Image 1 (cartoon, rainbow, N blue to C red):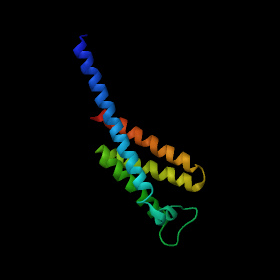
Image 2 (cartoon, rainbow, N blue to C red; image 1 turned 180 degrees about the horizontal axis):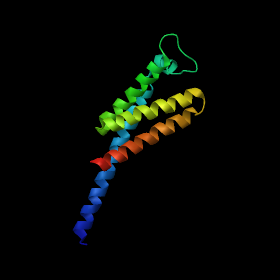
Image 3 (spheres, rainbow, N blue to C red; image 1 turned 30 degrees about the vertical axis):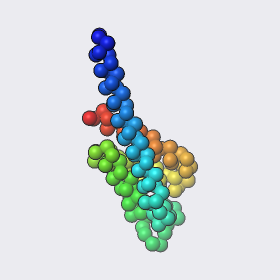
Length: 126
């Protein structure tokens, strides 16, 4: 293999990795916005089926919160499939946290790990 073709291969790997890191960073940033200011106290309290709010059914609050996250992932990855997957995983993870099966830190680590998976898989699709 020539030096030029090796360099070209390295450039492709670097650009692919950069794209994964860019998508991952964008999704982590979006996660921070979706999980804190966009969730707010209303959804944070309302999504807990184990301590239901009289203002909203828990499944509507959890669903709305999860769809917000799914939309952010779908926009960054340009994939409806990844957006729907994010919404489902996010809902399950948050429900387990509300049930006391996951700690706050475990919940956040699962969310962030999912963002990396979506970024890596979306790059493989392109």
